Each structure stands twice: as structure tokens, then as C-alpha cells.
Image (cartoon, helix red, strand yellow):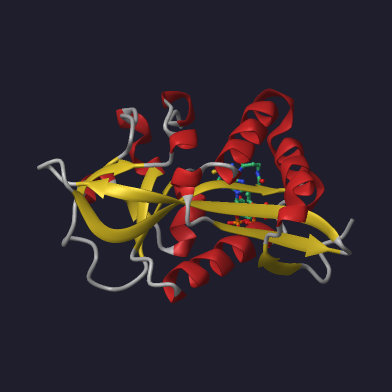
Length: 189
Ligand SMILES: CC(C)(COP(=O)(O)OP(=O)(O)OC[C@H]1O[C@@H](n2cnc3c(N)ncnc32)[C@H](O)[C@@H]1OP(=O)(O)O)[C@@H](O)C(=O)NCCC(=O)NCCS
């Protein structure tokens, strides 16, 4: 397999088995089965909608996948902010093609779609060194609490990106994610 001619496109329902296989491959024997189940659950979860599911395809084979799912921002008074927001829920690139900018292309493609659709904020819990290249910055200090507490030493891993100027500082609150992702086991970084 090579990274030549990699195309990024929206996922189709017929891609599902290959999408799951990419996650199984990327996350390995330990984490793979848990992540595969999570991806399946999110793809079936009505509370995750709208979702943004994009694949990287090379030689008619799916070699990468990114999935954004919908979140709401709960304000201090218990109401929810109307701002549209999404979370980068999973990202995976097939093992033998990692480190060839496929993950970067997937995330950039999906973020462009979110912005074009008027989504205002994107969140992620992940590697700060990786996600900062897309403009993600620490979310906790900007007033966004994760659905479950993040250990102090990993606070930088909980990140936010404003997709349209003027969002940061104008809204703050606790993030509520879709039912499939709403479990503490997924919030350990
Ligand atoms: C993380 C992952 C999606 C990145 O996709 P990719 O196509 O391999 O990455 P890209 O080629 O776009 O970017 C490469 C960069 O990512 C960095 N990177 C890869 N894995 C990383 C990690 N675990 N922590 C920090 N940075 C990482 C590399 O150091 C490299 O940095 P550089 O550009 O400064 O040299 C992919 O490696 C993967 O699927 N890993 C296993 C599953 C996983 O961890 N998913 C992410 C969950 S948040």
C-alpha cells in the first residue's frame, strides 16, 4: 500500500466495514476492539447527529477515517447554548501509512466542511502536539469543561478550535457529547 493518490471524501454507508478495519489496525490489539465498538456505536447514535465522517481512500481501499460528532454546550444556569459545536471523536490512519500526512489531510478536510456549514466550535481530547497544528488550543482555561474531569497533568489535551472568529470568550460551559461517547472510560488521556 502506498500513500500516492490519496483522496479524501465523505464516508458512505458501504464504507463501514473498512472504516472499522482501519480503526482496528491503527489502535492495535489493546485499544482496537474498544475503539471499533465506539465508532460503530457513534455511527448508529441519533444523538451524535449531524456527524461528519470522512475517509481517505487509496487504490479503492479506505486507509484513514475521521469522525466528528455533535456536542452541546451546557451553560451555568443549566440551559444550552445555541452555538453549534462538534467534537473530533476518532481519527485513525492504517498503520503502514501513518506519518504521511493522511491524518492531517483528513482533519483539514473535515474542519473545512464544519466551517462551511457554520459550525462555530470544534473540540478534541488528544495529543496537544498533533492537534495544535490545526489551531486547537487548551479548552479548560477558556471556560469549556470536558464531559468528565480530565486529570490536571493532561489538561492541555482537552482542546478547542474556533471555526469562525469571535466564538472564544463569548460562550463557556460544560460540553455534553452524544450518548455513545458519554462514558468516563473514553475520557482518560
Ligand atoms: C495519530 C494519527 C491519526 C496521525 O495520522 P498520520 O497520518 O499518521 O499523521 P500525519 O502524517 O498527518 O502527521 C504526522 C505527525 O503526527 C505526529 N504524531 C503521530 N502520532 C502522534 C502521537 N501519538 N502523539 C503526538 N504526535 C503524533 C507525528 O509525530 C508527526 O509529527 P511531525 O509532522 O511534526 O513530524 C495516526 O498516527 C494514527 O492513526 N495513530 C493511531 C491511532 C491514534 O492514536 N489516533 C488518534 C487518537 S486522538
